[in-house]
Image 1: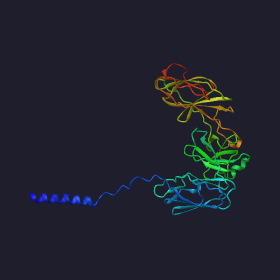
Image 2: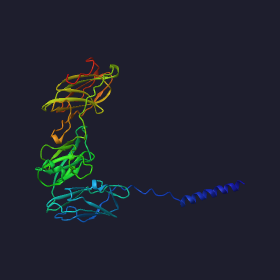
Image 3: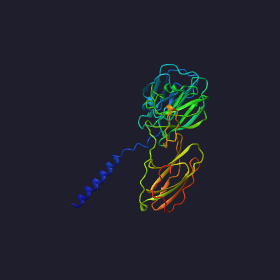
Image 4: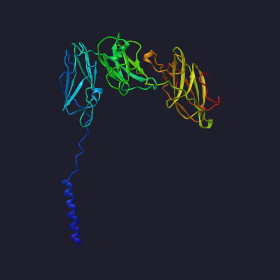
Length: 377
């Protein structure tokens, strides 16, 4: 009996080895493909000159899919009519009606419009460039689009160039050149002809780089003409954005709060300076001009300082308004946050318009005013 049991155990072990060898685990497929599709051939070669055509075609090294090409595939200058897209296997064809502008450099920005079929990686070539004239233009303008209300970079905003002598109504027509801001708010207008231009930025949901008839959306602009080699900031307001209002804080008891002793000395700039203490994007205190303030009963945590020149003396930081040519009242922010701690006084000297002095070491909490000063005191 013992021998029979032992034989059965040996048989089961042998079968396990056999089946283990016969049924190996499936392979993991290897490393994930992280390369986007590459162009193998094109009807108009990269950098071609003296081009006259009504279509462009690219063939890739793998099967591709289109991702909203009407918005993500951009042409600068814009094509003479709405492009038509046709994807067949590994080839993408773009057609349009009308003739390309003479003696111009055209830039095709693929963005995320063309991706590989399996992994969704965008194609490697960010631009495809050709010219209808005898040479490729080489000028470039760089910059960033900023939200004038939040002070943060703003992505996916249209940035366009019109001729220096173009009327205001030009924004309702196709621009000479155009692009969109990236995730970091940055934009590049490459391969520009030498000359001077007017530059504008605005939200552009339909992706055609121009305003609709009668549309009056917020617009960013630069006061002076720009040209190749320039680098600039475009300040744009959100639709319906309103100036910050002040939500005055209620001082907390001394045993659960801290104190900020703030000295402000504006360094340059014309007009009345306004200073704001913010927490989590909310303005808790506002002061004017130069002076020293003691703010007691502050909740522990981090605060931010910013100042601006109040051009119209309304006590509010106004957003830019193109339609009335009202420039933005731009904030100057202190790069260093203020850390308020229970039972301590933080002293800060703030020089808007100049390099701010570093925060001093906090000392024991002293005595002072019983509440935060009202704006203007």
